[in-house]
Length: 369
Image 1 (tube, rainbow, N blue to C red):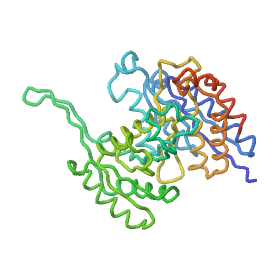
Image 2: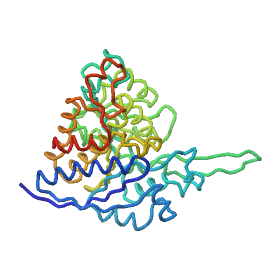
Image 3: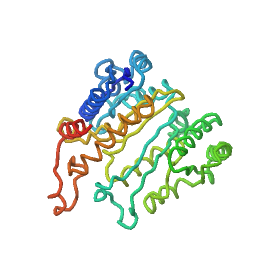
Image 4: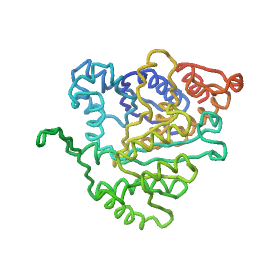
């Protein structure tokens, strides 16, 4: 057995972030004990907690600490946009500005968001039984450092009228690298790519479609199709089984991945990875910081624990260890343990499962590892 040592940057974040990241570390420590590896953790501040401590959502030192890590495990950042004092600050000083800065500084251009329906959680899926069928398993591949979120923007008065402008820009190199990553992932899955755009309206989408077709020519084993984003949003609830890898730009990917998460029944179950062109990645749950339930010990840590499994798989090449975490999660669900967000809605089904809190769910999964 090869014993390996890894430096893991840990951004616990805001809201429920510290609670769920702590449970993911607990499961990683169980992996380290079982397989003889060593994970050295370096705590890094980002988001609201960083604003409170330093006045900045992400400091240069935090970026340096992240770059010095082999990978970063992260909780969600931000707070309640209505009540948090962070949102009285200028946009570039708010928690989410730290997240955008981190993605750009680390060149995290590829965001992987799996959407998988566990058979034990079928009752949490809002879709009809005939649509669910045998379940679904898709990977949303979202471009993460281009498009509207990173384009030039301004709000100014034009001829006496307040006018806001956001610029959507993509270069062919930006499109090509995310397309290649999407087709590479498809080769390890069911060999199907659905490229999502708005090519009937947007120039950026027409370039996107052209480059995706060029990349597809290098992957003859992969079947691919183009789909307009509004149709894709409809198809996700009409027939999610049809999708394998959904490849799309930044804003469309942001919206579609949230839709896919709710189709699985709970955003608290969905992991994500943001990768650059090396083995480095940032791993985080797909859900938000849920400040309304922070500190109550009821948040679902599974998405963060599965994100840690993705870290083992994609950054550390520890596939067996990643499988061990994923199998442990399935086992705990099969044994009937649920956090409140994935409890059955019908009272008669609730008697067959046991509700647990954040810490207990982490303990159960670590024990099954």
